[in-house]
Amino acid sequence: MTLSWYVIVSFIMLFVLLMIGLPVALVFFGTTLFLIVAGGYTIDYLFPYSYSMLNGVTFVAFTMFIIAGGVIERGGIGEHLINFVNMIFGRIKGGLGIVMTVTCAIFGAISGSAFAAETVIGSILLPRMKEAGYPEELSSSLLASCSMLGCFIPPSGTMLLYAWLTGQSVLACFLSTVVPGVILIVAFSAWMCYQCRNLPSIQLAPKLSAKKALGVSKKSFPALLFPIIVLGGIYSGIMTTSEAAAVSVLYALPVGIWVYRKLKIRDVGNVFAKTGISAGVCTLMVFTVSMLSRIYLVEDLSGVLIHLLNTLTSNRVVVILLVDLFMVFLGLLMDDCSAMLLCGPIMLKIVQSVGVDPIQFACMLAVNFGMGCVTPPCAPLLYMASRLGKVSVTKMMPSTFSIILIIWIPIILLVSFVPELSLWLPKLILGYGA
Image 1 (tube, rainbow, N blue to C red):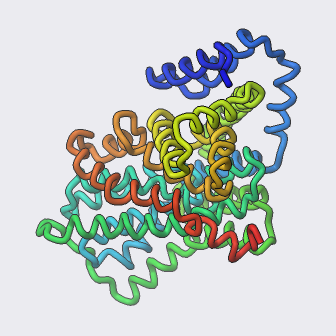
Image 2 (cartoon, one colour):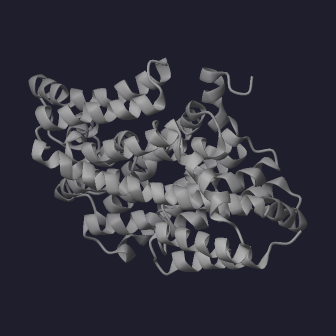
């Protein structure tokens, strides 16, 4: 089995353009345009397929969560989440690391964006951690990794995208990442506490009186209620995922404007415009990648890759490790959503050929892209954390590689070779596979 010359050239073109730093949406568009011209594909064959991919309620949910993320980012919800979690863990040595991990998980889940979680939580917590005596390189390295936790805690935009692309159950995909997500939260928290155990410079948070603790809880209640409403609505069956996405926008607006008063009514239009641009970029990517994926499927790219892997090895473990390595490499070059759009449907066929369940693969994608986004040399989340923490990436390298070796690589291996980690909750709650 062989690939056409233009498919091979398109692959080379895709990765070269990504490595030189061109915008991902333009890279996808340019590669698709090249394949249309070189491969003789017609617009009237490709456009209806891409339109049908966009014309669905799941994609509406994805874009609505992007808009909700923008409202949440400006509405002060992150600050009150931090205050509440800090009240619980702030008296532990390394406790601000736990605060960062937990709030990144909650905020990333309800905003649907790792970058939103990183910028909001980082801009609030990193100055606090510096003032409390935490080394800047430790705090910034932890921020880069734990900002990816939103991909694991439902409702995850990445899992929503995977379910939509591959035709899997949205709820099963949401549940597949919960157990690994909890493991990562515990692991990141334990890592930070261990790193800080012998640092005399660290100051603990002052002990709050019962009255002050009650005041913090009251102020934080609307922020804490947010994930309960969204997740409770989805899993109780009261709301569909797209309805929950719309409710998240409708809830975040009054909380940000009238409860926390961080968002002005005159600024709502600007927030919608900014998030609308982000949603538009995602729509363009989905439209072009749908055509790109369609061409690759017609050219039987998955079949050729499966044949190539079978030629190299028949060992199931080696095939899975090679797929993991490829997905981490993709995570080095682009954000998790872009990588998901490019390789989700194609790589799914490869792992299914060696017996990996589609829902397990959803979780594998999340952990591999998560590690890729914090692994040098590209590592977009790492460079963002470096800017927020005002510390050089070079100085962050020892702590970053410590997290990769001690946490990310083991969780990748666990998710890849222990299916029950990702399948236990879908089976328990949804009866998946029964």
